[in-house]
Image 1 (cartoon, rainbow, N blue to C red):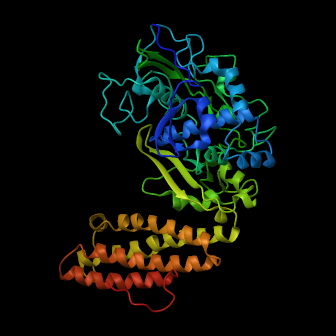
Image 2 (tube, helix red, strand yellow; image 1 turned 90 degrees about the vertical axis):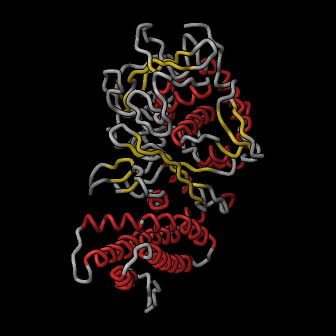
Image 3 (tube, helix red, strand yellow; image 1 turned 180 degrees about the horizontal axis):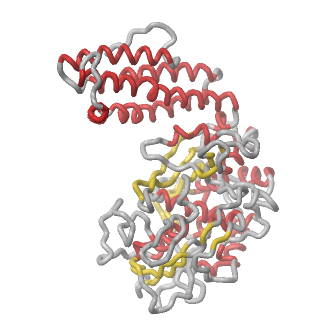
Length: 521
């Protein structure tokens, strides 16, 4: 390999951050842990990269702190949020392992293997990026061609390396071997975002000590840079040895092949470790687990296209119940719920962030990063969590049991007349044309965030629910009126009247109308 400029992740800038004054900078790992309290957040547009970078930094924090092992240790970190991390502790840890963070080191390159042969197949660097059209990756956000290629800066190559280990798809991958899914493919990842990067880090630090959390403790755990063995076996399957091993799991064998100027346009790429998920005790702290069938195994909850985060938030913030429950909220949420009785946290309003992708047979359909504010007064209050769950139930019912059937009734009468039966395909085409579903869900997203604010602020939480129900009723009325007015003709005018009456009866049936009210169309 030709001599290339040295790039060390501890010293050199590669972590994109936005500081409190709004400027965008790149920091090395050492600077990050010196100044995390001076930054607003990670300035990373890719939801996948955002998540893996956060988990990578959390792994360093857990190993440096060797915890937090207790609630008191976590509180002590939280109370230091204006001063930030102890720089001496992190300097000591980073000084010890800095030689393992050299991106192009010929002996121990960061996150890579060294046992590829010179004759082994070379892949374009886009192979590391799920969103770049390369090999079997679908064209999603760009129109890159492998013959033209991409050239990654050292910092971009480091970020892409982390993504490749955590978000690689199962399949042949164009190399002739059978790949396993990387750890983050299944399920969306849930985390908290605070006012600063320091707060974000602490809010996502789960307990890390002897035997805790279950199967993810400190006992036999370490990230890959603390291991003596540089190379990983080809497709060897094993369980995560602990929390930081999971956060930094190397599911691919990769070697960056930099040009003399340090840009990376080619890589060696092969299957690496496969994560054994058989153990029922292994739970990724960032994921929500849900039984797909009654008494069935609990699997990570996936994103669904056109389904916003708030529609799942009741399951995310639900308190962890007895072992065997159908729903297990993310451990990062449960850990925070266990600590928020402290007055120091009472007024905190962090954002809940969910990141992930929707894929079909190893092809990304879309990736997402959803944010919503979640006052801790809701997270810690059983009554308010119940009201939140009821609000979501009413929203789902308003669509599924009232607005959608009323729209179908409208379409049927408009197509076939009163008493007629139109073809189901023709009805579906009308519903698509009037965009009734998009009208409802796009408008309700904004309204729900306001409901959450009211639920947190009002002393009587049932008052917030009553206001929400009234908003839903008005929203259904408005959506039906706007959608139905896009169709013209005598039969469609008749359909408007009949459909609005049907909508009224359904809204009354599900409890959104308490007494006779006129619905104006």
